[in-house]
Image 1 (tube, rainbow, N blue to C red):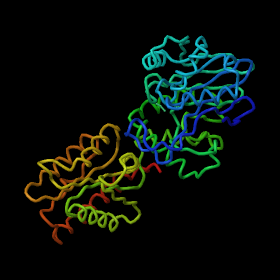
Image 2: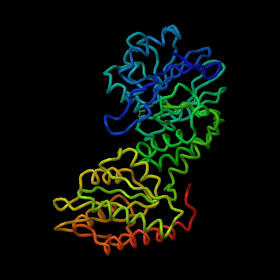
Image 3: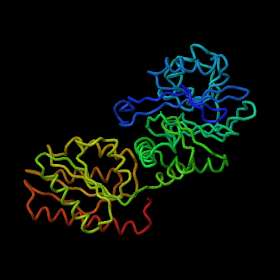
Image 4: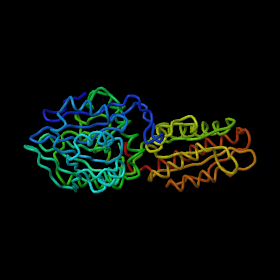
Length: 405
Ligand code: FEO
């Protein structure tokens, strides 16, 4: 199946309606995804990126209906990860000498995955490939999100094929952004950014600056996953600029786990305290054992403060909370406040464990946290409400400078 994008560009990818996790089980994909491959026709025919390994055979079958494979003059591999290169393993058996344009690291990753010394043509930022009336301009994008990543700009149509950058895991029969819910699309783009791109935010800032300096007249952004940004191509670039700069919304997120509901009751009292002190703040509570971790990381990413709580377990904390705090540390978030609380029977050690994990994750801690023994008393719950109010007040003061929203 193919879809027309412009008179000279067709989408020839694969929509994966069934996908529910990505990177193994690491990232949830509730809405499925797509592996976007594009065919550019000019005096030369160019295929940009392919599809995930399990779809390689059917992708090539479909591609044959679109073009005589021998008429593909060039291949562009923006990224070697198997969700974009898997189809090449099948295709290159049929057209083995076709040149593949990629970065030096791209050639390494493709050789590493498929063990073949294909006809790699190494490109760098600013290199151009004439294809007739138009040309391709390559833009290296190392660490966005792999060392081999790059984007490709098509002059004339003014399309940036951005690969993973600006993508979303969002299966849709529609190709273009204007045909789906804007809120859902931006949420999926944010989730993608928070879980995959956020650790490389300094590179995002630099790369967006470099692309701006190249003065490419971008009219459309065609990522390798999800919808094409056609109606508002600048919007996703602006969103990436905001997300990369210590992003936060006026939201405080409480994450907790609980054994006998003592920690839950503390969490709810903290939320009550926040609401009382700052009713304009969005407060969200999540039990880490009952919440999808990729969604939770997205909520943490967008929050100005995160308050975490657990019962003490064997001198530590419940493993699901521990796991999400470890994942949070790996995101390299900046400019967020943290708070800790724990319930306990015999040892209040959990609160220190949580505080340390949040500190290690770059959060500025507010207070020493709150502890409650056994079933929280009215006095303990009042202390929780006070703690919530204290944190809300503190975060309001911290955010005298405008919060990115
Ligand atoms: Fe969509 Fe990095 O692969």
